Image 1 (cartoon, rainbow, N blue to C red):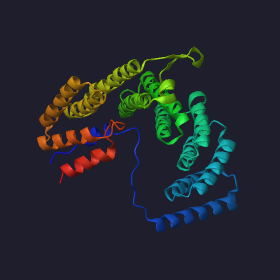
Image 2: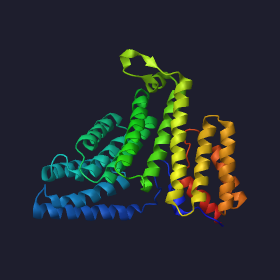
Image 3: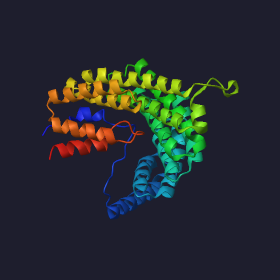
Image 4: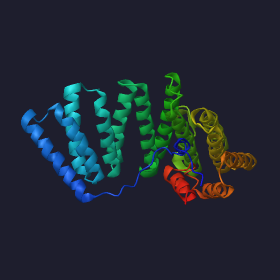
Amino acid sequence: MYRFSKPVLFILLFVFHYSTVALDFAKLRLDINNQESRLRSIEANHGYLSPELIEPLDTLVKLSLLANRLSDADVYIDRALQIVRLEEGLYNPKQYPFLKSAIEVEMDQGNWKDAKEKLNYLKWLVDKKYEGPAVDRVSLLHWIVGTHMRGFYEDNEESEAEHLINATRISETAVMYSQANGLVKELTYLDLLLTLSNSYLLEVEGIRGGGSTSYRVRRLGPPELNIFEKRSEAEEKRYRVGLEKLNMIRTLSGEFFNNALEAKSMADLYIARWQGYFDRLEEHEFSISRGRDGLIEAGYEPSEVDRLLSDLSILPAGNMLLTFSEAAAFTDEAGD
């Protein structure tokens, strides 16, 4: 049976996803013990703050996170950050992965106050003191956006608007930065556009949810002016800019992938999902028809396409886009 090509699966990615890994915990424990022994050996030969400890500390952080030993991971992260800053300077990019891990530990423990403090420091570094290639900076911005999106769902209600506004602002910055630095020919640029459209959708979720989140997202200008967009106007604006980004993906996808028709047709289904969420029924039906016809012309069986359309119709409104796992499940079943 016809299966989605790997390039097209790329544009089915959501902001981020988690892989479910069957862990061999006995092996994991053995790996941790081996790395700890290696760490002690390096300490004995080179000292407690030797830069040679960075690599085993990095490995121990990753292994500890896999084993859900968050307190151990925190200790290794702090030590690694201390060594990096002493040896490489306060703003050296070698600290970025450890800062990300430190934020993940706080989030996994539900410590959003500490997570946001560390996240703010990472954002300051990326904004004011960044060292490294432009493409890596974009990757960091994208990760930060994903963290704010997670915060929208997991942090307290009073912080919802803060996370939404930050996710959108940083997504917009990442897109403009990519454009200014000649990165629009990178696949990551499509992912950024997808992320930005989803940021607008989450803002609409916040607006529809009402309360202080809705007011803060719709605020125009500084708080003291007390000026707000009407809900209908705020939603309409986000509908238009989100649709614009999805249409950009549709146009660009034909340039990135060998099967331009397949890529554009999948983008049509994203656009249809977007239009359906905003009750643009006539536009929705047009995009569905164009996407369906395109996929069949590209080689899909009509029954496979209809099943995909059915899957799209039952996805939760808050998850407008297919996740990687959902797309992979569809393609696996299509190959049976």
